[in-house]
Image (cartoon, rainbow, N blue to C red; front, side, top):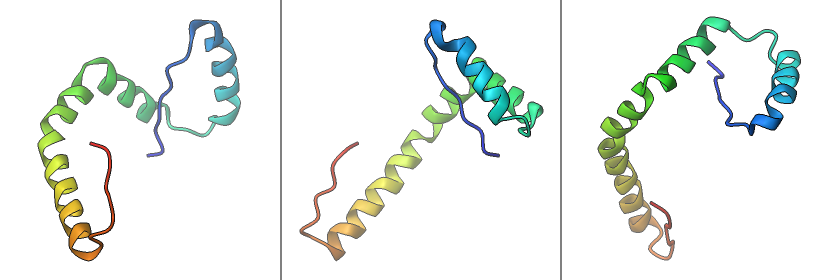
Length: 78
């Protein structure tokens, strides 16, 4: 979908909107509006909270696999 979003200081909003209007003229408005509603409604936050355990289990599995293959490798971060 090639969606993304920015948090921009109020003083820079006009300049960013102007630049994005030139760069994004082919982007789908429906997809952008849908994504904006996903963020605004809190559905994105709820989704991330629901998925956090699954993401953690996947990460732990990768770390365990790496430890077997490369015991000298140190994985850092959450």
